[in-house]
Image (tube, rainbow, N blue to C red; front, side):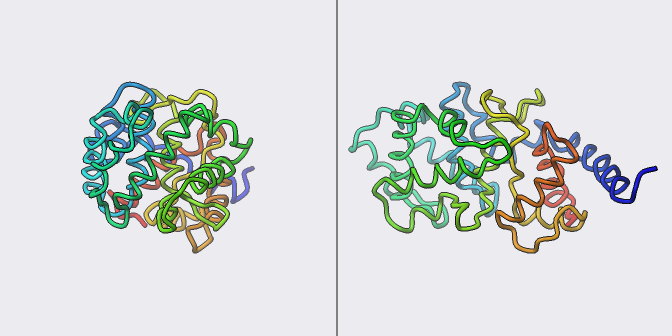
Length: 261
């Protein structure tokens, strides 16, 4: 006979699995920042466009998408080629770019740091796969933060790079990792990175997914920080040990489209 905890998790799993099927759907791509990397077909272009779009993913999603597309246009619609081969003079076009608190100097800083990632660290996948641990992506996210911090930058620029050591939930980078790693052939996430298992991914915790998770009893911590992510991950990995972050679709969809939280 199942105890109350097992029965609760079974009921939650059935409910959330239905919502995953509903929202893990290409029909929702156009209104999501993942639409930006979907404009490309080459791996490195998808990675860079995805990373930039994820970096901008706060506030209104329509604005996020428009601003990410604008920045990509400033990269001549060839983000990887621009990142890898730009000259100092090419960066001038980025100086007037703005998105909320992300400005032109931040954009230049990101492009320069990404150039080092691809030239000196084997690219985004190699960097993350080297530093990721068996049950956590946070060490790799921390390494990315520290790598960016090692380049000349304005102090304010680092607020755009998640810092787990300061308790950041790293929502935007976890979302980016979901895009790159998950491969369920549904036409939403790309599944480009074969060296990282979806089982180690963390849920991109934000206001919407956090409120829904708390209402469902999957999360008790009030702050949406790294400790909350770890608590939520523990529950989601019980529901699906192989692909726990698929429930991001359910939690986010319930919060944004159904106002469930």
